[in-house]
Length: 241
Image 1: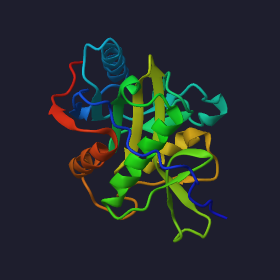
Image 2: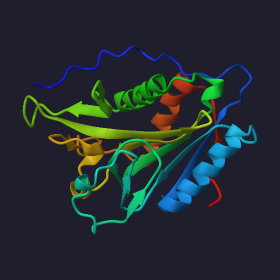
Image 3: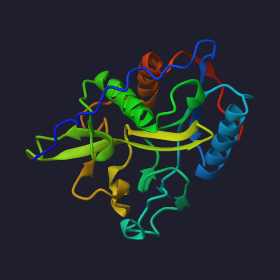
């Protein structure tokens, strides 16, 4: 039987203290190499912790690759030679990144917000769910599985697929890494891993669900749905790599 939506409390807005300033909203065009992105993200998070830079959300795409979080099990890397594998300090297990998937690296100072990681993850889930609602897709959270899920009754009464993943790291109460939302990736690329270590469930995307939307349209909704939860944003150019 498919799990019912998790009975978590609503995390409510994760707004900063008054006077904190807007979150910079940055978008990179083209495919950004993973190692360079992580280096830039970690440098920015450190600058935020030193109060030398504004909070930031960075939207990008990566070339096809697998990442291994701190809980990754080697048995879940089914095809180790298929794509490059990057070890990363974020939480979670194996995941895939590639063209057609919108990655959002979220660098927020939780000192200015709430030092509550469970509520922060729930707020990220709420952001994704609100974004999917804009495309008439019902995303749901699960108590035992981080991320956002979509029921697939056309495949069977008990079938549900994952449409978005969450993997975060926090240092000095500044968050980095973030979310990935499947817009139009090659879903066959997920077969080289057990995504997030979860057996018995598939993956899906907006296009797979019949919603022919562009990354630009998704970006617009991500920003619109981010602000009620996390606060005002201001556009900025992509980071220097």
